[in-house]
Image (cartoon, rainbow, N blue to C red; front, side, top):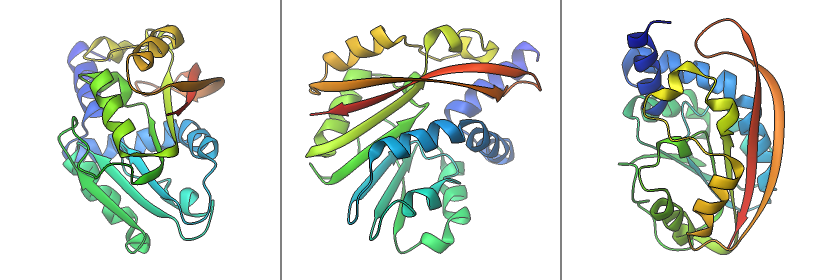
Length: 216
């Protein structure tokens, strides 16, 4: 891909917009589904819990969350108006159990300690102030809650041509250091590997990613 194409791809991965954004959203859901599924599994969702997903994309995976337990409530939050509308369109059947919220990417518009479980997949690269944002997540998470943070490791992400444009990359050690500066106190690291199709072409690439289980 040419430089301008890579820039557009990077912009749409951060904040999908318009028709191109819808297409990117479909691609992200497909290429990230194993990371998303692993994150949902790690949450250990139980009956009657309230789940927050940060950066839901088109939320094509929403059914898998409701399949985990009974009487689940879900809120998805995203900075992309395109993904906000697309998620609502694709998930009309869950209109009574799920809501989608559009926000500016810095402050979570929720009261303190209301979510049992929170997760996010492949969004941390775009957090402008990661420690402050982690503290926002801490604020809205219940005292016995779980936060799952899933991201591609720096060594893998650096090999992707579009990550040179406005992505902040982290190794496990770098991510641990950031989290240690927040209010969170405990975390468990789980490393995963898989072969996936590249976002910028048809080649197969070997992805190494991390699932962090974080507690207060």
